[in-house]
Image (cartoon, rainbow, N blue to C red; front, side, top):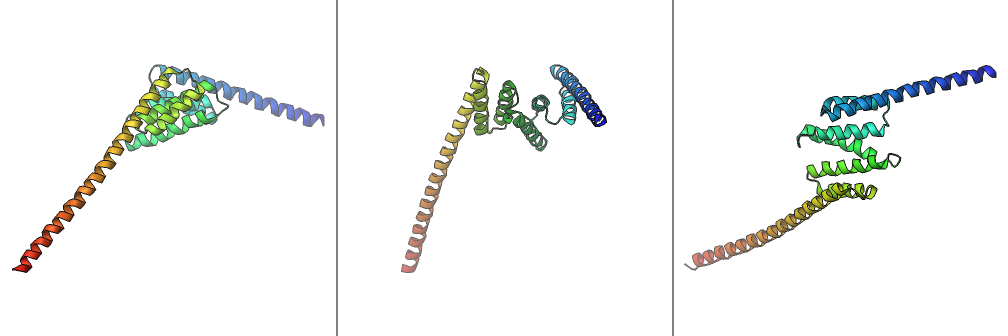
Length: 196
C-alpha cells in the first residue's frame, strides 16, 4: 500500500515537473515570438508561436499571436492568401469564442477578424465582428470607428445593389418594349407584303 502511494506521488511529481518545463518553454517561445514581432520579423515570430502550439495546442495567447502575426503578413486576395485567411480566422475565432480566454484577448481577436473581413470586402461580417469586439470592450474607440466605416461600406454596397436591380428591371422593360415594337413592325411589313 505504501509502495503504491509512493509510486503515485512520484508519478504526480514527474507530471508536474514536465508540465512546469513545458509551461516555461511555452513562455520562452512566446517571449521570443513577441521580440520577433516587435522587430517586424513576422515569419520568425510565426515559427515561435507555431512551436508553442505544438507543445500546447490550447494556448490562447499563442493562437492569438499567431493569427495576428499572419494577419500582418497578409498580402492580398490570391488563392494562397485566401487559404492563409482561413487559418487566421480559425485561430482568432478560437480565441474570440473561448469565454475562458482573457477579455482583452477576445476583444482584440474579434477586432482583428473585423479588419480581416473589411479587407476582404465582407462588410456584413466585418460589422458583426466589430460589434462583438465592442460588446467585450465598449471603450475601444478604434473598433467603434472601424464599425462605422464598415457600416457605411455595407450601406453603399446595398444601395449599389438596389440601383443595379432597378437598372436591370428597366433594361428588361426596355428590351421587352423593343421586342414588342419589332414584332409590330415585322407584322406590319408582312401585312403590307401580303396586301400586294
